[in-house]
Image (tube, rainbow, N blue to C red; front, top):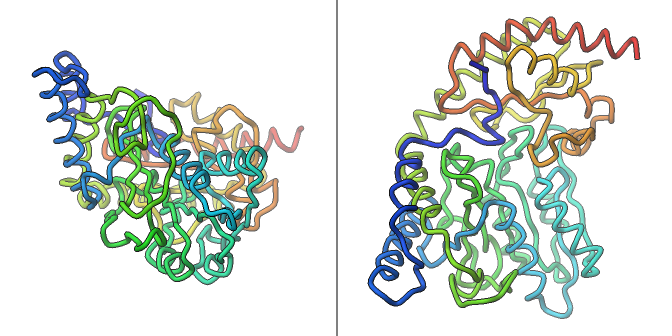
Length: 388
């Protein structure tokens, strides 16, 4: 069986989520129907919404179910842009964000004439509050930031970022897709006031053992958002269309199970990660761990100088070890890591990284499989690089 160390891309469904989905998908009617079966589906759907709201510490009405993190991010950013005041035309975008955010903002720039104001990262991939605050101002439509970087795992000071946005009168969206399931999330503690500060937060089910293509945007009542598409008045008029009741039920089951086990799972992931880190640095002394010490518990992002990350990935895959060179959303595209570049590294370094991400199903055997193959893979990859 393969050693799977790509939980940051997707983690296996929890049995509780799978069972909840199977039970729901065969029974439920359209929750917008007014007959008894439809109203039963509505009750089940709203129970799921309440469960997800409890886990993220939000009000149920603030939870808008979506098809995943990418749609949630699009709804937050485009929805805020389309609801903007006429004298605001700037989007604040930190370097190193997920491509779902970067590509959405690029579309706003090219198709909607948005102006983009960048925020530099530190060498550890962190957004500094002072740097972030300096980019805010009365011309800013909205700002966005990762709760935790999906590639290097660095955790950002989101409370400080939210406070800066609140003081500047700017709405802030947090991409919590990578953080969800690994860190305690509380929308209520971060929620801004009067449409400024933290007004929206994106999460996705498949990162916590829920079904793929299911997620949510948590939206405060004070947020000003327009819908992406139209055709019904569901979910506060923010997302039209028939709602996926089975997906929501499975998401809720995964979220509740995760919340009950998060601390234990985080400790498990961190212990394996630390063992993996020590073993890699012993086997490949030239390797460098990137990112901050305050990082996601299952994340290990390693620079292998002189070796192509793609070559290393291929060699490890041949040994039945699954890892990643970065976000799954850019898989198959031979690009240097924009996150590593944003941390001040050159293109060569940005092409020489691997992300190892562990999860609740990871074992010592998975770590052993990496350590048994990493030295030979590095030697082969560096040799190929010298010959090319």
